Image (cartoon, rainbow, N blue to C red; front, side, top):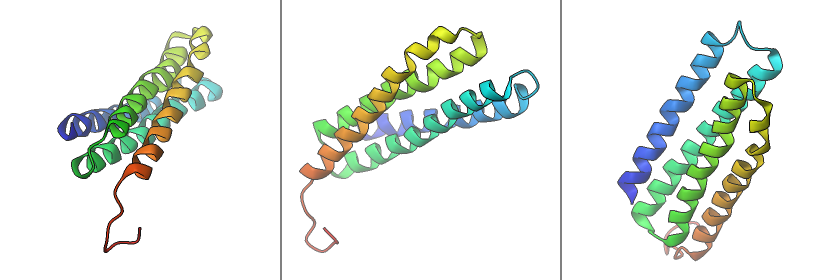
Length: 130
């Protein structure tokens, strides 16, 4: 499970940086300021959740649990639906893609809820700041 989540986190971090660079350099002259902000939101949230996936991988190495697995799945679905819909909305000009963006946001929230559940279920450490 750890290797899989590390790879998924790294791929999403890579894609986020590439999307941000593409937006800043390749789309700057063609997008309206509003569309540029939408595209940047997609890239920013993808990076935030790539880092969340990295945390899932690191935690799973020490405290494997179904809650961490579901956190990773939820974060990944959220990235694809939330950021993906924003990228497609801007690149295609089809505003109807914005209707599914909140579904991705709900998946991201579910990932954080699963991470909370995983943390609550983790055993307390004897020599650390519980």
